[in-house]
Length: 219
Image 1 (cartoon, rainbow, N blue to C red):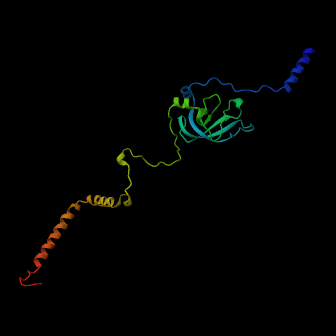
Image 2: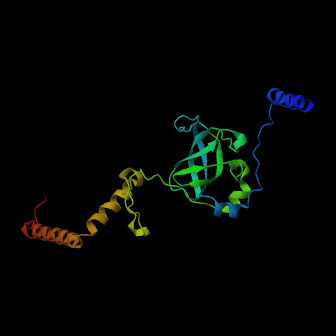
Image 3: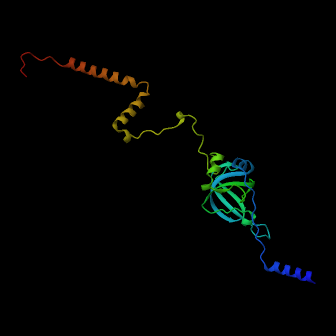
């Protein structure tokens, strides 16, 4: 009879007393280089939105969908906007993201469905100087939806420089530009000699046609 009463009180206390809360238990994360190798994607960016991830049919939503605008990446990211999942419950090792904050993210899972947990080296960018120094510069992702502006010049001579406006260099620049434009013609060098020869011929004609003046003419 006593054992029956003891079991009864244990069951009763189990209903009354709260169960101990679960806690996320993590091991010490590896060094940045090892974490980079083990992660699916590693990038830095600013959180733009946090919403509930779509839940499975008949089940409550258990994850947050976090959208991040990336500023640089070291692995697995080639676009400017990335979405990651993280558990809503911190006891399930969910990572707490804050809107408009920048983070260094170590994501796992697949490229189609990246996930982040509190046991990774994911942290605020302001506290990630040591990791970023170990990872290096990274690369800047490019939005694939932006149209390409065409091939870039491969040599300095291929760069097209705008012509100087007439008002920027005054009259000297106008004269120099005028000389450069005419200097490229093959007959430009003959204009000056022809003009001088024509002027001399006119002067000779005037001297020949002018009658001599009489010696006794006072006028």
